[in-house]
Image (cartoon, rainbow over all chains, first blue to last red; front, side, top):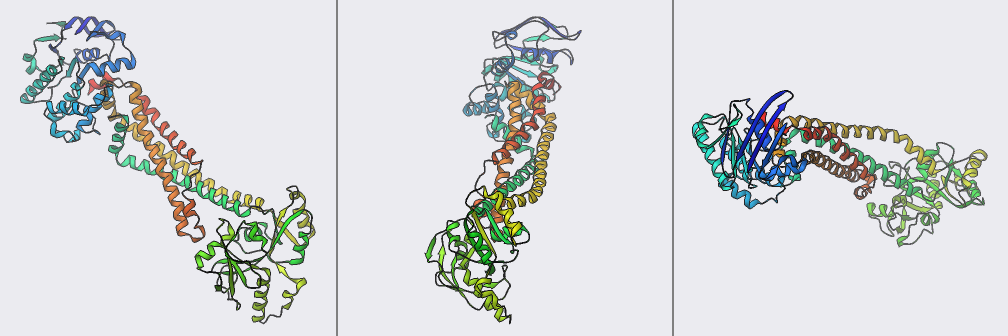
Length: 214
Length: 401
């Protein structure tokens, strides 16, 4: 499902990240752990093809990312990867439903209102379809972001620090939401987090402080 | 969901600043459209009214005034000329047609024109009812006169001394013997009668005023106000006017030349207004640019997430361009509508400009240029923001969150 081999990413002479070998199988749940500055964001950017490694190969869902370029890479990313950013970044001028439809449209899929509604229903937001993002609570907005990430049935679901600003109860619920939705899409879940509270939920961990798989 | 809906949602959300930019654009486009339509209507009306009149001869004075009075029927004439001098020109082999015209009286703002029946044919008018005049104080009225006054055949009305109204009424009333069909030319607003009517009216008038100027009714000293001349060949334009101006007491003026002079006089004012309107469009374009550019600081997150969701660089640029284009197109369209509407309202408010009420909704090919200009300003306004969108470092923006 996901293979990184001999990865180095440098900014000038500075080494930002090194992953000698990382392999994740379909449906696994992975935590990328490490303190801030350890390269978690860099790792996610590499997985999504937004950054190129200085050296090494990345294969996601059978696709060698070095073989993709420009809009083909963008399209591949839209269809293969669901991404929940830390700050959610819902499009404020669009309704909840339209935010999810936007994900379908930008991935190059036909916009399927039925599927978008079903996805929003599965995260418990059926009654919020026409609301503007600014009227939602943090928890509700995060559910929209998750629905937006999974509506295209991604094979890789990525969340960046999903629990950073949440209390214990909310953090647990978010984790539950992510795992459920990953299972629903049969997706590999990769969560980048330095939050110790959610460590227990992951059988697999990539600890970046040491740049090796544990 | 598509780019159009996305861009429209941004426009809806952006509120006051966008509304102001749109307003500027609408006003700019509206002003240019207004000037364009008015200029076009005025020019085509003047052209229509002057059609077939190569030269006007009348008393010495301002040639422009002579044209305004004799061809467009808006100014007072320069004076009178002896009829026999005008008729002598009729025998000139270079003249194809000469129609004498006598002005001086009016009826509720419409001019009473003493002339010969050829004038009706000259304007391509035909009788809708009745017949031509055969005796003094028989009148044939234009379509607008009939519509405004409600006069019908055999109706009578009193001529008023002077062209603007407010003068004393003549004792002898006119009788309507014919009504003309509408022509869209100046004859619609004229009351036509025989030359003899005007002479008699003024003979009466002067008697009432204890003026003993009987001479006016003597055949050999009869006067007219001016005469309209059609050349036999355009080449005549070189010799005949100069000859008349130099060798007689008459003045010859060319409608085409004077109309062009008139246009160049107020064309300067129109140019200033047009420059001002262009400035408005420019300001609107600049406003759209500033609004988009400032929105980019917030918008960069939206653009980053859109890229993450699969949008290519070209597509996020396209979204910004489309947003600006939508604004520009809306401004252009609403501005054109405003311009046309304003012209039609001028037609409603000012009775003299009544034809504008319908003419206002004719669309001119030049308006395509206004739309092109507005859209070009929209594209220019979005170029730099679109370039910023193109270059956004998605990973960095999402990471700094």
